[in-house]
Image (cartoon, rainbow, N blue to C red; front, side, top):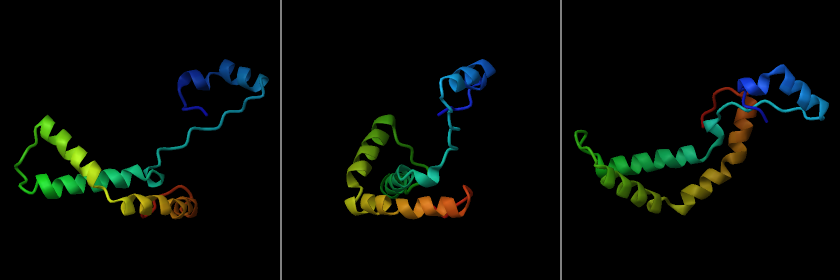
Length: 105
C-alpha cells in the first residue's frame, strides 16, 4: 500500500516494484465513516461537556481535562461500544452504496 509520497511515485521505484511482481494499491482516503472510534470520541466530548462545561466560560486545566477524559472513558457503556461494532456492516454498506461519498454515519 502506498500513501502517495513522492518517493513512492518515483518511476524507478515503480519499475523496481513491478520487476519484483509487486503492484501496490492506492492508500485509501481518510474514512471517519468507517472508524467507530470517531463515535466514541463524540460520546466522550458530549459526556465531558454535560458534566464539566455547562458554563460556557469555564475552562479546564490540563490536569482537570485529563481526569475528565479518564472519567468519561470509564463511563462509556459497554452497550454503546457493542452498538458501534454491530453497526460496522451497515457503515461499510452505506459507503459502498454512496460510492465512497458522504454517509449518515
